[in-house]
Structure formats: C-alpha cells, structure tokens
Image 1: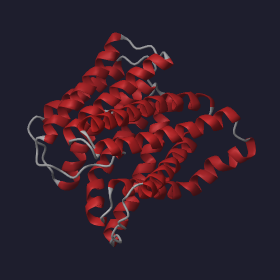
Image 2: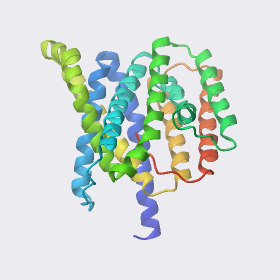
Image 3: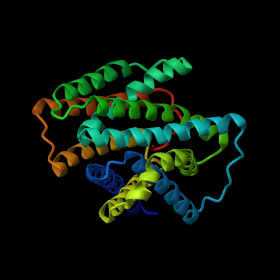
Length: 307
C-alpha cells in the first residue's frame, strides 16, 4: 500500500474511532435519560463488541488458533472479563448520573490508578516525570469536581471505579496476551463474550424480568442497538489504529479523542460548564498526555487492549 493510501486509511480509522466514541457517549446519555437501565446498556455493548470482533476476524486473514490457555491464563481471562463487565457497568452508571464531560474527566484518573495498582500488586516503580504528571491529573479532576454544577457523589464514585477497573485491565491484559498466545482482537472478542456470559444471569434477574413485563419502547430499542454498535465500532477502530501507529502516537490520539468526547458532549447536550470547570478538564487531559510521554520513555511494554 502506498504511503498516501496508508495515511488515508489511518485518517479514516481515526475519524471512525473519534466519531463513534463521541456520538456513542451522547447517544448513551440520551438513552439513559429515558431508559434508566444501565445494566442493559452495559450488556448490549459487550454483546455488540463480541459480535463485531467475530465478524472482523472472519473477514481478516488471521487464521492462527490461539494456544490453549493454561489454568493460570484461564483465571486471568475470567478476572479480566469480570473487570471488563464492571467497567462497562460503572461507566454507564456514571453517564446516568453526571454529565458526559465530567464522567470522562474523572476517568482521566486511570493513569493514577495504574501507577498505584502496579506498585501495590507488582512492586513496579514509575519512570522519572510520571509523579508530577499524576499530581496534575489529580489537581485537574479536583478542580473540575469542585466547579461541576451537576456534581453527584454516586456519579463520581462510579466514574472512579470505572477508571480503577480499566487500570486493572491494562495491567493484566499484556500478561494474558503473552501467556495465552491471543492477538488483541481475539482477546477482545473472548473477554467481551465471557463478560456478557458472566453477567447474563444477573441481568435476567435484575433487568430482564422487568423489561419482559413492561416491554422496551421502540425508540429506546433503536437507541440501544445504535449505542451497542457505536461502542463496538469504536473499540474495533481503536484496535486498528493501535496496530498501525507507535505507542506514543496512540497515546496522543487517545488523549485527543477524550478531549473531543468532552467538547462534543458539551456542545451536543448543552451542559453548562463554568470556565474553571473547563480549565480543570483541560488540565487533566494535558496531564494525561504528559504521563503517557513519560511512561513511554521507559522500557517498552506489550501493547494494551483498547478497552
């Protein structure tokens, strides 16, 4: 493929990733305002990701079967699947209770959780320059929280839990990929399917019975399907971008995507945001970029799943 063709393909994938992420968050927020079932949204996103990954794998040239996972890998996969489901559920709970812009600002604390859990679980020390960036992340989120007009303790707790669980997935995903011999796309499909299977009995008891009795409005059903499709497309596009660029470029693009999601939600949903609130969001986003730069100067690590 020629250089201009590769650049065009990468630009198209980035546009798909950014657009699906921003639109998906807006659609999810609108849906939760009239269909307050965050567990159902989380399950739909997991099923959508598993189905889309299966379709992409069938269309790709990747035919290599993964090695059968050892017992340790199986335990790791089960724990990651549980964390993936809880991440999706907490993300939906945060979107339900607080504005999209604030939920994504709080989720910018993922690097802080990653550093803390890496030290607590594996005794890992961070590279030079990481600590100041993490302090700036905390200050940015604190400033955004102090000036958030629609602050909600439950929403803050859900967003923080989502960030912590996402950090846990980051720490264990590379270990699973190395141990089981899975490609990132196969791992994403397996984890999404396993997480959906683990949650299905709970969903049937908590949401399924009520929805079967009351039914799902046609508009809510359409938005639910659209939300699942957008979430799955964003994950697949993120994986494709990750396979084509350097880790530093992916970190910059990921940070830019979060800024677009925050800005797009403020414009589309017309959420009021005081200047100090916007300043806190900008500080947190910039600090995450500084963290990524400092982290990537350390010895290279295995690529993470775009979860």
